[in-house]
Image (cartoon, rainbow, N blue to C red; front, side, top):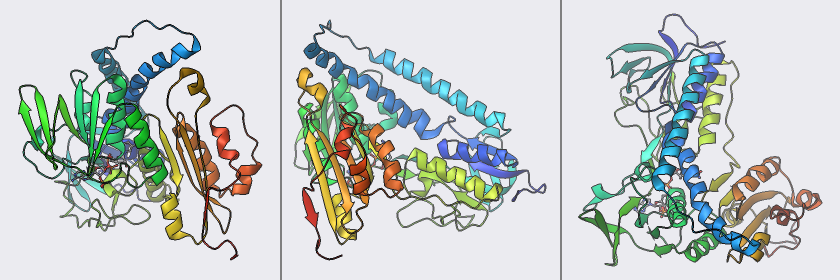
Length: 465
Ligand code: NDP
């Protein structure tokens, strides 16, 4: 055991009880540390309270209308379906409250003291609780305060824009919504609202949505979204929002005016570092924002660590959890542990879903001398009877020199589940020959991954090496 001293009130003070902070607190306590965790809002953080979990519940809700419509081709007559938004929101809130309780009891079971308060760092070893004014002497401090929606650059009427926080608990399903942004949150919420029947207009400043994803994925998803009735407006920004009674009008750069029940901004998130006291503790921030940390998540102040979104590395829940666990093992378990941030699988829960791991085609061509691309688009079997116009995209990016699969990109039903599993193979360094040697499982969509024989493109000098 390291880092445990009776001179302090606690061995570890965790600021923020989100997924990363809670994991760090639990593991540190299980290593014998006396741990206190402060949370000013609700235990569970963004993922549980106003992010991944409630979002995914809404995603499930939004898929039923398609299921009902698809059923006809299979012989079902489904009576006109009715949807009740307040029931969905109430059920979602109930589940979130249950999960919050589970998080709380998991902390309590290992003896972590939970304090409902905002906490401010006074110096390298002292935290002040704003609720009581108490000062806590700490052996170590872990900053796990996460991130919050960025409101965008100030424009007239920007106070009228809602973020994903509000979108998860609107009083009624909007008949019309304008969403600005082209990243994870904008795309997921556009799908949710469109699936539930809202008219959705998506406004994105660049040429094509989902920058950072493989270009084929971006094009494919945009087509699918447009086929589902979402209007994707690119090369535009919202420059003003006006309120008229209970409705809003978004004015775009080109002058177009879009009236809607809500205007939502999903233009990124910012690390929660304001008024935390990081300056007086000598904690430096990184060029991209967020707290600068080394491979062990240690800040420029030796006793203070930071994990998760507040460090702005890879802003995904499982990454924050790993970072929290690694921190606790390093500092309290006597097992220095670095989190490997390569080949992290990711999904966008739009309809159809995106799953991706590793390099995009563009990244591979920038980094590798030889690249082979395998790609397949096909109509899923279910769509043959349902009549739905949708296609699945599967793509393998292979290092032509080593035959290693360096990227997998899937768009289609179940893409997130498929990518989680194939990411094991990618992480293990599977080659295209390994993929080819794997027997197909028929009839599935995933079998396509192991049956792509010929590359659709080869880059680099194939004769060399
Ligand atoms: P993203 O970074 O994914 O997307 C932000 C979008 O907003 C981009 O399209 C960006 O455009 C655009 N944008 C940025 N600044 C402005 C601006 N000033 N005016 C107009 N548009 C702007 O952020 P999100 O908010 O969607 O999500 C935050 C993070 O949360 C994600 O990056 C991800 O890490 C995580 N997340 C993960 C999910 C998942 O795993 N399924 C789901 C939701 C969130 P441009 O591309 O041109 O920069």
